[in-house]
Length: 361
Image 1 (cartoon, rainbow, N blue to C red):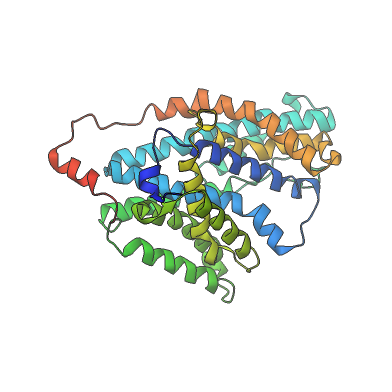
Image 2 (tube, rainbow, N blue to C red; image 1 turned 120 degrees about the vertical axis):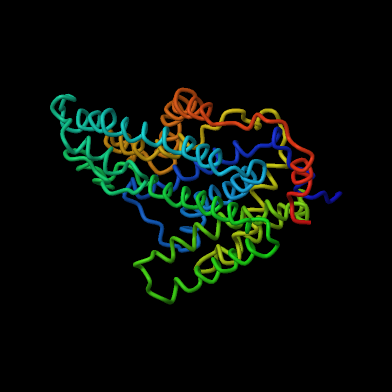
């Protein structure tokens, strides 16, 4: 089979990355079905495979796409506005709906309380305390007291702060012109690898080294793939090899040390190779699925659906989350993204040359 590079295969207008991200979001739902049912997974490789790879995959895909966004339009104002509009409107709406719709619904189901009986200061503080991506309040008074995973309305949102910090990291590297220096991003990637290893032996919890290294490593893996995509061959045998490599690394205490790059190549390569119109989703509801799934699953847990078993609980959670995610996309996220400032001026000859040479050869 012919070996073409990722740069040759990837078509920004004809790829399946939105489908890939939806699969990753569905994987998060499946994993959360365990703790939200009161179940535990003792086997460490299984915990990594089922519990960490989905969010890690999101960061790898984001690293590829966000670095690409800066390279196509290296303007700090437009870049930052686009990132804020992509994250915050949908996030704030989710907080409000959780506090003033889903939480009262859970109180009605569990205790027969009507909204005017269950809404109090805690509902408002849930929105305000968590508004800037730092999760300072997990529960809402009088709700989720009789479920297997109590007092936690959304165990997914905490990762969004790290996602946004990665965006800011790209902005800093772009403004300092370090992003396209040949060795800077690979050196940062290796530094994240060292940090991941060090986190297993050194107690530096005050800086959350393990979390910083995890998300930096995965985001930088996607960035490395973007910058060196003209050198990375992709075809189905290579994708199978990447999948086998990722599976093998699950036996390590931290699979990302050796598995981050194969995982990034696998996801982005499959996204580039699969061009079926049925999987080429024009609308990206994965963000909505990610932010709404946990509170929807808690509502289902209040109804006792978790007693049906892990898989039925997860499938029901996915089915009930998709309408909310679609509404979030079409009503909030897509409309917010239309507010992004755009570059209307025609490109100069110099800019066209930069575009042609934006990949590291």
